Image (cartoon, rainbow over all chains, first blue to last red; front, side, top):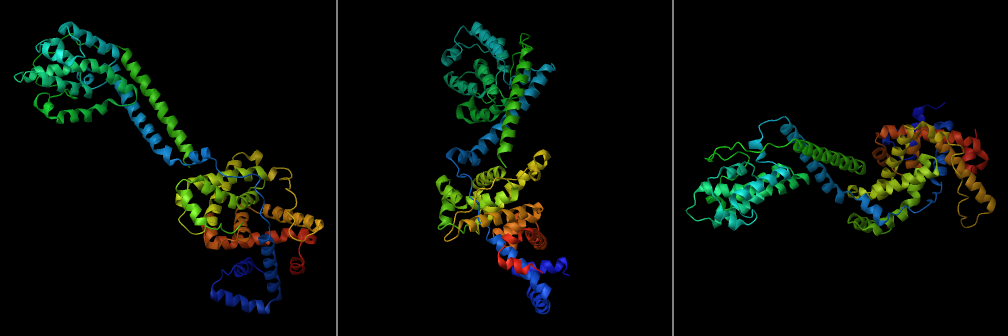
Length: 285
Length: 203
């Protein structure tokens, strides 16, 4: 009677997978043991039957068409999808946190200067600026010449400023100012132009860019020579300290629809991020 | 399974660069072998076809991970894993476990008549093949896979160990038990077997 080990040895012997010592020992036993020889032949015969088993014909071709091949090559899709998922998750976090902050009634005036403002608010600023200056906000040259720096309304506008494009506009307008213009004046000009642009900033936030994205752009603007000379204390995240004008009482409070709007956009981005992430996960196996 | 395709490495290199036609040349060459393995692991045609298709899609996707060596062994590894994935999915839905499927599968007819065999011989060969496949199907999954990779696909113990993720000793013992199991099972079909087998197991 053969043991499991005997069968294992015979099986490995057929495959040439025994060590030299094991092989020699087994061959000595085979010489003396007829049963062992019979079992060895049975194993060989079984292997022979299995090896002769004809391949089955595939029921259809498994070739890949161009579309399947594209789907099967996720490297192309993977990076943009991952980037979108991560970016929208980050933007969603910022927007939701922001809406909570605004809703909680925290002192928003300094913060609001760095973030997206609702279009209605921006419009209010714009109207204000127009009333004071009686000029078209988008025409940089007119504004810089007619600006009267001491007016409190413009200082108020300044606090709401903070978008990169506006700083670049400001560079141009600063250029147009007389060389003797006090720094304060150019600052006001910078702020004044920022107001109409807050609408664009809000749009940016809605399209998935976080408000923080404007920070590097501001740095860039500050690095330009013109900006260095006049507009250096650009409206960054902190309110300008050199502003002599008192904070006017007429700073508009953000209305209640703003936090709700931010929350909705944030949640939508979160859902988009999760959806893309999950689909990516199922594709990338 | 067929031996390697002539100029195989050329096609692989082209396929790695995204040449789908080159990859499809490899598919056409290996699809019968991959399907056969899948059929014998899975036990029915529909699941085998699904697993084979999945295997080729995965192979295309992971072509970068093929770093030389036997392409057939690399492909069979992916195919084996695709089958195991499918079997795991079925385990979660026991109602459709393949052991319960009645009659397993339709026979796809006798093998193409080769050279000089009579119709009777062709029928007998088809019966023998069905008997052998039935005996293989009766094995536990782990033993079945090792047996197929070793005795049908003729891979080495090393390759089988790499594919199934077990050590050489386990491959050795599973293979031995699988061969014994098939041999015992085939005793019932003695009249179909070639004379050599009958003699050796006739004691």
